Length: 269
Image (tube, rainbow, N blue to C red; front, side):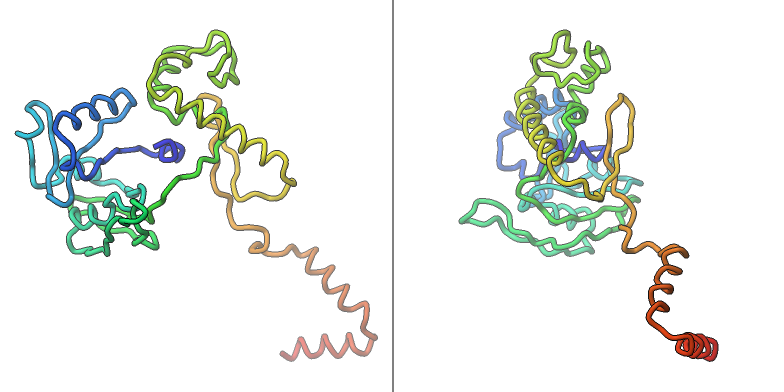
C-alpha cells in the first residue's frame, strides 16, 4: 500500500478470497482499514461474490456481480497491482469475461503465487474506462526520501492536516512538538520503513554523481516527488558544433586532393 501511495494516484483496496474467512473477520478488517484511511471492497472471484455489510450483516448482502468495484473503476484508467497469486488476472476475467487471461495456482511448495502475467496490457471496461493487468510481485521496493514517507500513510496525512510539526524537516521520531508521533496503529510500520529509506538515502549519497533516470519535483506540503526523465542523452540529436568538430577530425588526416574528391562525391550522391 505504501508503494501504491507513493505513485500519488488514487488507491482502492480490493480484498479477494473473502470466502475463506468468517463474517466477523471481514468486519474487523473493514473497521481496521477504515482507520488507515481506506474504504475496502471484499469479494471472492472464485465464487463470483461481492461482500457487503452496510446496512445489513455480511451474510445477508452477497451479490453475484462486482458492482461496487465497477462503480469505482468507471470512466477511469486503473492499474491492478498486487502480489503474485492474489487473483488479479482472475478478477479481470470476471470484470471483462472476453479477456480470458491465463491464471495460475499458488505454489504449494513456496506458499506464494507464480508469475503468470509477463507484461502490462490495457482492457476496456464494459462500464467505461480502461483496466491494466500488471505482473505480480513478491515484495515491492521503496525508494523514496525519508521526508516523503509520512505522506504515504493516509492516517498520518490526516494528522498533518490538523496540526503542524515544530520543525519543517521533522521525521516524526523523537523531535519535540511533533504532530504525527503518537498512538496510531501503523506508526511502528512507519518507523520501520523510515529506517529503510534513511539507509537507501545514505547509499545513494555515497554513489558517484552520475545522470539518473528520475528528476525531483516539488509538490504540496514541501515534499518532493520523483518522476522519470525523458530519454537519455544517447538518444538526443547531436549539436551542429559537435558535428563540425567531428568533420574537422576526419579532414585532419586527409590531403587537399582527398578532401576535394570527398566533397565532389558527396555532391554527386
